[in-house]
Amino acid sequence: MLRTIPLRMRKNRLAAIITTRCSFLALPGLVMLAAAINFPRRTFVRLGSSHPFRTARSVGVLRSRASKSGSQNKRNVIRVSIAPPVPVSKPSEDSFEIIPPQKQELYFPKYRDLIGGTPLIDLTELANPKVPGVKVLAKCEFMNPGYSIKDRIVWHIINEAEDQGKLKPGMTIVAASSGNTGASTAMVASMRGYKSIIITSPKCSKEKMDAIRAYGAKLIVTAPGLKPNDPEHYMNLETKLCSENPEYFGVNQYENDLNPLAHYETLGPEIWDQTDGTVTHFVAAGSTGGTLSGTAKYLKEKSGGNVKVIMADPIGSIFYDYFKTGVLNEPESFEVEGVGKENIPGAMDFGVIDDAIRVSDSDAFKMCHTLAQTEGVMAGGSGGLNVFAAIKIANEATDQDTTVVTVLPDSGIKYLSKIYNPEWVERVCKSSEQQR
Image 1 (cartoon, helix red, strand yellow):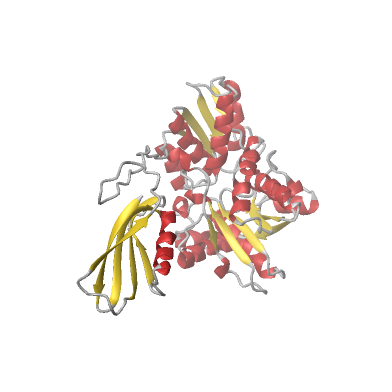
Image 2 (tube, one colour):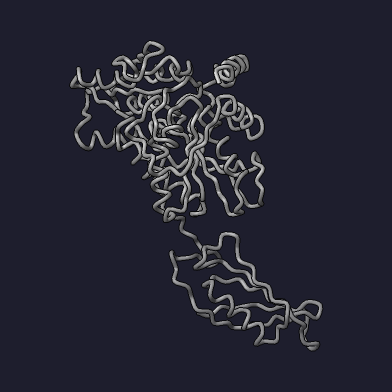
């Protein structure tokens, strides 16, 4: 393809303004042309701002000293052969038309699609490690749609129940919960068009109770002080109601193998990927045992058993003593919600746990305030408990490659009337210390 290029003389310099539609690969040819006709050093090639990689309207400016015998008014013509591009459309004589990409349909997720995939944040500045390089990281599970980690298990359990025909349209979903699983169940039930009944204890915060009702669920609050073997205890009442009503489906989070499986398939892989496999310790409190057992199992499998799993347990829970001694002692009262237990749930696997740390209500709640006032992270009491234990592990580490990962299971917004109420915290912590 031949192009006519006018050349003009100006102040002993030969300037060539080359305007052409050419393949991007033809541009080096222009530079070679400049060298062939004695254009030294200063060779500039400028692509248009809308260059689409394959073809473009390209402007090259080539300058060189001119022959002294040249005339400033003389016009010279050089014929340049440039291979034509493969056109995407027929261009006009003076411009090149770029065909815009075909318009793609925009995708907007449903709110339910936001379950999982939570960010992993750096809390290392709260620690005081003995060696440099130690990290403390935390999964922001309060960024799930229902503001807690329990969205993961409820979504998984209900999906499986529908797939297996155990949960059908018109049925009612029933869940016993210390609060978060109840809120997640009520939320997911409303998304799927089911009615729901949530059973909890008086220990559940007012904010969580209000959220459960806001999702449209029926809330049952059991009497205070019931023993775990009492038929009216909130953990037993779910089984009773479902056995009496064939149209009820029980989430059964404490004994359901799908609980730890949900974390094995989601939370564990996320932590491994987000740390690029550098996680060395996983710290989490137990309640149903799902988060701790499922996540720990995955991380241990991926690391060849190298990831150490530490259970954080509130003082008063039976888990710590059972793990250390195998003895089931009588539980004592504690105020951190959603972690610790009075009995051993079937979803808990102590075989994946390497060690355990006890944490007081006071230390857990103080850490919540530290997180809020230094990192701007308003976490629930279980998050404060987990971070306190994670920092303890980090401060005792002697390996600079130590990466401690924990979870912030829910949002502090669920506890404004308790953990973030100074009068309540002072009263509860003082009572707790007196009992010890």
